Length: 314
Image (cartoon, rainbow, N blue to C red):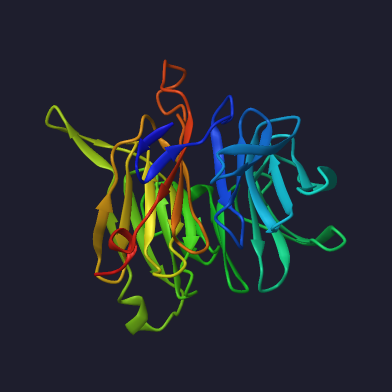
């Protein structure tokens, strides 16, 4: 289905909420999608077809490519799986003691990283594959991002990096590191985003700031929405945010301004992913049960071609 000349909707999308969308590391052709329907699906984006799907025994909360032919995934069944996308063979790599919330690849160190509600972050050697270390966290892990050889972890209770408290007053929803490795962006359930820098020197710390977004005036009342998703443009270091208001915004963190806003999507933006080359943005519009179990639009994944005019700092 076409929604505009620069955007289309993927076919054969999951039967339940979409938890994560991730592009292949070397091409915008392949997209990995995890879902509450217990599947992980691989799509050939330009052909608009599902190439394969595999199953967990519970909702899948995150997925990631290790390389173009291997997907890793975890979720409510607490099991970490590695799936060979060429042979359709799977390998149970290990487990956490509670649901796995985050799965990321760290290319600099060549490890997979998982974060769990069991209050640990685990590293996995993808070659064996086997566990390569466990790090206890102060609370449940809600989000994590890899920046070079550093990990930025957001836990329940607003802690980030364990050493810092979040500069936002409400629960952290998403953290993503700048591609240039100088900092990270975090979002909260209360319509705010913070831009943070890793260098502790006072002149760099002076550059950090936070701003309100994903808020809508409805009948003269300001409705404040969670900011669920962040994805960076690898070339320009600008970033997209997606909220439960159904909007996607693209921000220029250097000039502190919004570059554009797309049309409103049918329901909450649950996950966003730019392709590595920054030409394509995958947008998961998927109800996140903010208002409990009410009638809601069907979940969908939109593939949008983006231009430099929308993503490049002005």
